Length: 230
Image 1: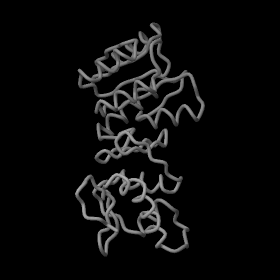
Image 2 (image 1 turned 180 degrees about the vertical axis):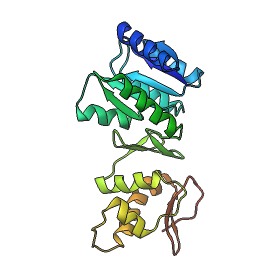
Image 3 (image 1 turned 135 degrees about the vertical axis):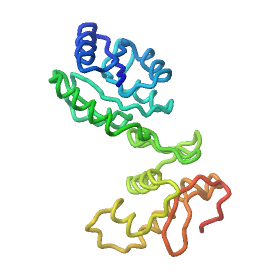
Image 4 (image 1 turned 30 degrees about the vertical axis):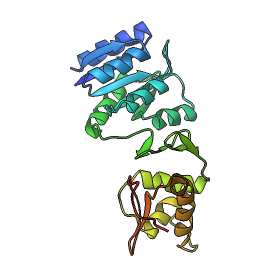
């Protein structure tokens, strides 16, 4: 297994390289965010160990850039910070796991092996269906370059659709996952919120991507020529 270590502290980088090589990993080490993005683009790594604090860059942004370039190599972030907000931010930008310094080396190796088992399945930090994008971390939604403002429930509903593009989702399924299991209101609330979304993500742009599948539910797809679902 080939690992990229992104760490600008020379001593820490050396310890990681020696320890990982003793575990039979092939290890490359870089000290900057720019090098990390380039190396991830040019080499088929099995995992990346990425420090959050780098001399030339923020590790969160390095991870985001790696994901933007279409690389789904598993990323394990290292940091001296233990705040919940930092762990959440790391996961939101596309990291797969998060380890706080100081850590036990056997735990690092165990986490790497767990990432190898998970593989390279796409886990985009920013969701996209056609020119419609949604960033769960910043809660930003755009159609092309134009920002769209959504309420919290509209955002939650759109995010669920965008995580399952082209999949027909029933009202019951949407209520269970976007509202909650104990919801006892009118199930037609889904239709109401679908209408709200269409008024914001489709109709102003002459699009019909959020469609009704008669007798089944709703589906979000990238199709600018879909029939008007009104």
